[in-house]
Image (tube, protein in one colour):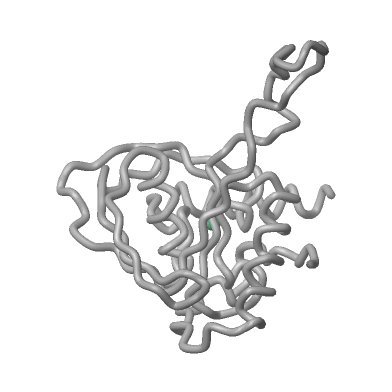
Length: 188
Ligand code: NI
């Protein structure tokens, strides 16, 4: 496994429309494992393959909060006092995802993105949707999504179509975000 470098805006590769996966082989498994390791290392909750420079329709998501930020819970179930971390990782992998039946009703959520570091902005998206996808073996799944999961999957789906969350903002807000990003990069 490897932590991969994350591409940041305004890199033109982020505008790529990614290609469907048609071979469910070990190489795909390695890519997914590397993407998960990269996402956890960057404290993100979602990552699209194009964000590590691979133009394939592959997403990883884990909405669980980071273990290190969680309150340890005291526990003495076996007679010894020790602490348990209450959260554990719940990685989800989406190959060739499709959004179906997006709700007419919109919800607003303050989004961020590992490819647009330290920029956060409110984005409106359909509140619920259905998602159809394949797993690492190529089996198909379909599920209704709501809440943060609906937000996250739609944000990540956008990456597969070359769209960033700042592209949903007004031209003025988007250019302000890009300027802020450039300034932070120069300062670093
Ligand atoms: Ni993103």
